[in-house]
Image (tube, rainbow, N blue to C red; front, side, top):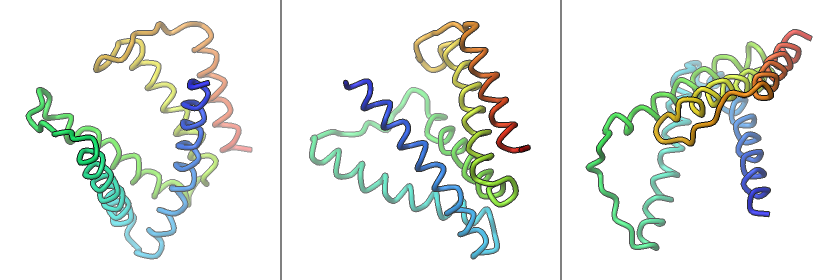
Amino acid sequence: MVGALWSLLGVLAGAFIAIQAPINAQLARGLGVPVAAAAISFLAGAVVLGVVTFFTTRTQGLVIDWRTPAPWLFVAGGALGAVYVTSSVLLTPRIGAAALMAFLVAGQLLAGMMVDRVGFLGVAVREISTGRIVGAVLLLAGALMIRLY
């Protein structure tokens, strides 16, 4: 049952991404500067996450230790997210939300398979099986069909 809830949360998060792309594209049209729209989106997200972090740490009595053994992680995730949001802002009006989401999911799957394969940053190692390869090829084919037809 818990596994199903986590899966549904993943579907919901994916739906939010699909909705976020045209919202950010509309913001870019209104501002006339796509990168500014991405920056505003990131700022809004940072503010929300900051508030949630503040209340979560206060209610649970947690103390954040900022002395991390890997300080590059402080900027790497945000930098990758900035590329994602900026690309979404630029691509949504050009290829449409459905095609963008299809290609994003295909890219996530391919990168996820490599992350799993090498165990990047402590992720459990999972082999790239024939089934996973076939699934990735089918997903990429579906993304191309959504874009081209």
